[in-house]
Length: 283
Image (cartoon, rainbow, N blue to C red; front, side):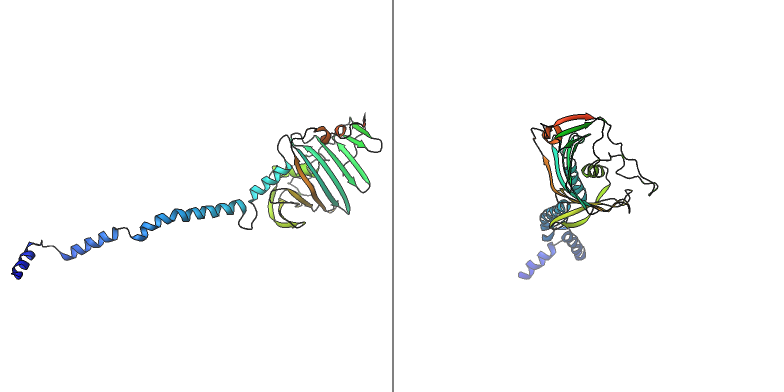
């Protein structure tokens, strides 16, 4: 009886090719997603996000111990040399050249850089100027000159044919702050390395080698605040110069601007005399 049932069951099965069944099953198995394929899409976004965050950290900070990006650093430095409208730039610099040390203190309008007052001390001598006027401490007198300001110095191409001094065209007595601002705005400076200035982490922004004069370098903090400037001199006739900025700040919401920017505001009781004599030359 059992053999009869078994015979009938076999007879009821369809006749098919076993190899065709194996090939079809194999193809179906190959097309089925595995556990690894199902898990991978869930982990990929997390890994990708980590890569993006790490890249952002490198771009913004230069890595765990690297510098800010070159573009961000030069723009940050320019912010200090060209402060926001309505502010007053106040700097005190100590300049050393040829064995002589000069201290300058400058108050300059961000909106109108020509509106500025500068106090210069070298040894026992002091000189305070504003525009075409100067203050005589001994007589408490402000001398306002009717003479025209000194003309801009022409480009000097004698020693480097085909190249123009990037500082040409600026007033002869322009302070270094204005010269550096002009170079940064003209894209004539670039980040050149890392240094330590007075124990502080600093970054070097140098005049480009093809700018038409020997390379001088500005050292700034990570936020772009100027710390020191080193100028090798135009040629053998000009001694190298080093400038440090113990004070470099942007003054906001100043109520009495004239007291900082003008001689009459700084010395309200001084006598004012107008004559044809030009103000003393600035060194």
